[in-house]
Amino acid sequence: MDECANQRKFKTVTIAIVSVAVTAVVAVLVFLLARYFIFTPVMSDDLFDFTFKLDGVVYQLPCDFKDFTENGWSISSRGITENTMVYGEDQNCFSMSKGDNNIVVWAYNMSGNAKKIKDCKIGSIDISNDRKADFVIAKGINIKSSIEEFKNAYDIHGEHHRDTDN
Image (cartoon, rainbow, N blue to C red; front, side, top):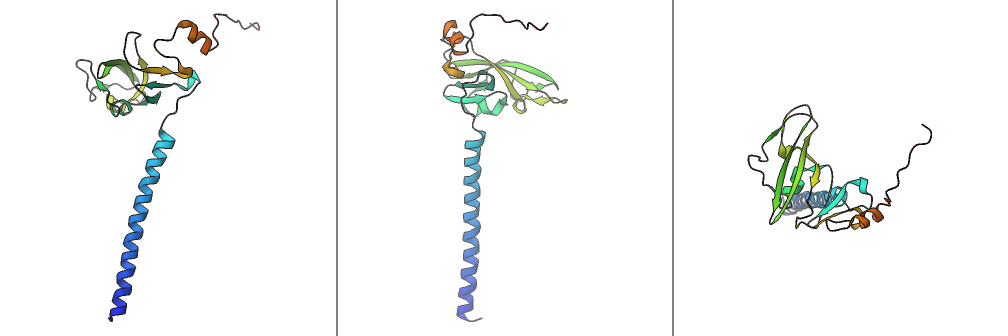
């Protein structure tokens, strides 16, 4: 082979390698952007969207157990770990903590087979009024909101309406 042929072959291989590298970088960026924009819950004003903000992070129920652990929460109940089994079509209630904050969550397993807590969905959360956690639900209602603020936010005035067709 002459020198020109070798240089053309080298350029072709170099272009192919650069092309693959650029494609890989673009694929990773697209995945990360899609994960951020598509899978990141957004706080809603509709109570029945089941979104809430806990210590600055927005969650939407049901969510994965790892959504809490990735944000610094860990199981604090005695005798329960992320590997504790939850029977099929059952739930397990346990405490989680992050710093001085404590919450109670319910891990649901709607499958027919036993699963580890870490593989279950979190379908419920309980935060007591005496907790320090920064917790906000739809329309800005938080732990310290009054009952009047809650009623006004959700247009609840204590009126009971009956279906008159019965």
